[in-house]
Picture 1 (spheres, helix red, strand yellow):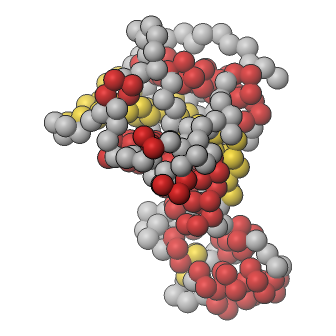
Picture 2 (cartoon, helix red, strand yellow):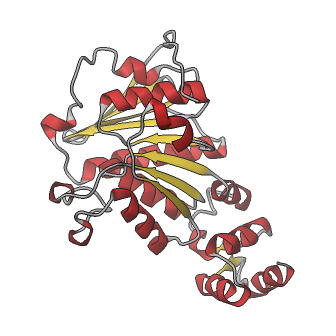
Length: 284
């Protein structure tokens, strides 16, 4: 490894390590992209791909992101954009959870969906996409539903869970599971021109409060559909919240949600007081 580190330092120009130098190190020293990026960041070398991060994210913080593990539950409209942005900003390990395959009705808004991926598992498309845009990021695909019975296995080691579900029952299960498991959760939901975002830390009950009047059905998306821009906006806000959690900086959307109306271009903040959480037993 010492020779590899020396090579990386000698290849650095203006404090940056080019992608071509990283690729050369992979071949020359028989390393994986993930290992080369780890060596660079651990030795104070900024990969050039992140140069536009460094005015807001220090190299120590970039390394923290690289060492992070984020679970994205749902890889469709919201989840595809979330995965894309997490990979581009340099989160080192993404767990992609979704049981579905791509269908034609996904093409209008899901960034991982193309004519070529129709019939393909969404989690497999996530793996391929991240390998294309940032090979240093590891994606663990889980082609399955999230539920309380498998949550412990699916979210093992996750530092943040990002909700990109389209089902209110599963979303409430995720919120309850994260509370018990001690995992911060970033919640996002969309429907038509509208969306909202909230962050729930263990012990909070924001998501449960948001849906306290829910009776049945999957949610407003089923009635309003979704255009291309709504998931992109809400997913970006979710990624910002996830990064703030991972870096321990900034003000989180905690005990409140940001409600977004893209038709009238209005944003409202709604507060949610804490309520006693429902006792939940999570399968071992």
